[in-house]
Image (cartoon, rainbow, N blue to C red; front, side):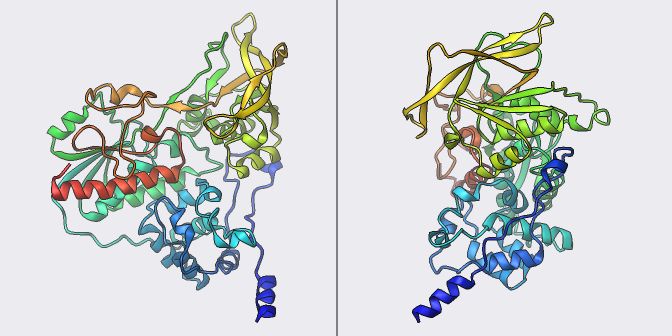
Length: 473
């Protein structure tokens, strides 16, 4: 028996890699880098799953997808059925399969990881969602009996789309109010085309609309209508999925020089306003020959990789800690390295230097060393006195994080915020200090992942249903 187990272990297929565009070619275009699994590769990868009787991977998923269930269907080549199973709890599978950090959520607790690499859950999720769409076999769930009650959702990012979709499936009349001219929130303005094609986002949004959700774009809550006015219009519950779209800047000399961007503006111009297709789209975005991006997260990786594709000859990441402490996904760091990005660790800007025309020409950097861990669990960067030096550059992008936009929040005087300006909401229900108002996603947690925002939206949908059914707050 022991020999048989050893033999089976040896026969298990290795984790299947995804093909990607060649780095030398992909830096010349904005097409998707990762190309996905073929049918055969997906079946081989799915066959690695041992279908645990008590799957920890489900507990690691913020929206509780039946992971062993859909993978078993992939093993049986029932790809459309697998996608339908995922959609029972996740209305955005093609998006999650591309941008969610499965390596720190469902895959990190995969039992197989104790003896081998974990099952590539995210890649399989992407495969079945794309297969269903390509096959043209997307079926909508049967329409429930109408509840006769209206719910308003502010924001069409991952949290808003999720809560809207889940409530529509329950029979509620749901309207999403989106401030921008296109739905998707951070999915359309923040994540580049080469990582998440906007046609994929449009496809997933279309699925939510087909569930019966009405979507109103160019609708700025707090200006066109306040939350109180939405209640007066007949909405019985409101969900705030406002995101965190207010960029943080460095309070340093020279910050207003021409050629310094927030990552928010830089990526919005490229992604939402299609600057990379200029002059077809009338949104120019010029970068110099040497671009530096300050920060170490996924937004920094998105910014620096975008700058390469916009024509930068030399691109750098400036990060005040070491590579080990970088919060970006390892896959995104590896992609950036393969595309020629230079990483400058343990340095921090203290001043931006301009030329006679008011354009950035250089930065003054200070060398750092690492001390004891801080509240984030990462080692604290400590300045090395007297280590300043000048560092030439033509363009700088600040990617150190974003905060809550106060526009809509300023009109809700009784809404309780925390000291950072985010909404205080119950983690399990999304309930806020205002009766009938729920919130979730980045406007509550600060910058987090797409799937965490979706998890918040799903929990809030259950709580909204309970509130509107019982009328108990």
